[in-house]
Length: 222
Image (tube, rainbow, N blue to C red):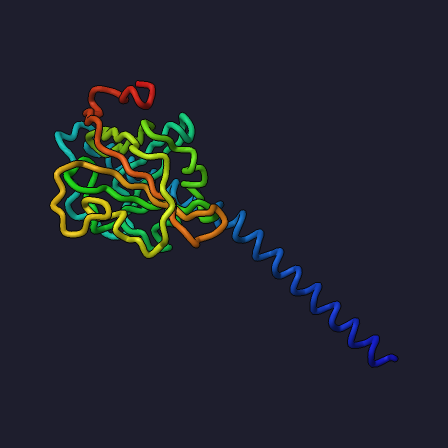
């Protein structure tokens, strides 16, 4: 009987320990990764704004010399809130996605012919695209660069695809080998929010370009 009691007591202690570890991991994933990512994103944004302040009257945008991990623009999605603004960094690896919204390196740059494609976490690590599923056809997505505001208009209510369907970020989405003629945007994130079995995709087209010297665009209440 004593042996049995000791075994039960030992098993109980192991289960309690495992429970505590699982709880700590959950807290880390749900809370601390967001704290870390938000701090990192704020640092990226501050650094980018300092760079822009050094040249307050740029004539045009230049994306030359951007390296993996560099911040080069901000993304605004009015549907997600009047103050929603996230830095865009070059790259979509975990390190980059933990510092803001990531730009697919092989996709077009803002305002250029082709497909400006970005990705963001929907849960943990800052979860910038947590509520991306709220987007609807006709919504504005604004990219803020050093010189311009690029205002894109969303063309769909969201499409669910498998992670293997990488054609969604091609220059002409889902049409390999076709030469692009339009200026498009693609936003990608995981679906469902707490899983990664699928991807949620939004596409849009460039509606207008406005120099920052003219103030904020109407899409942002300018």
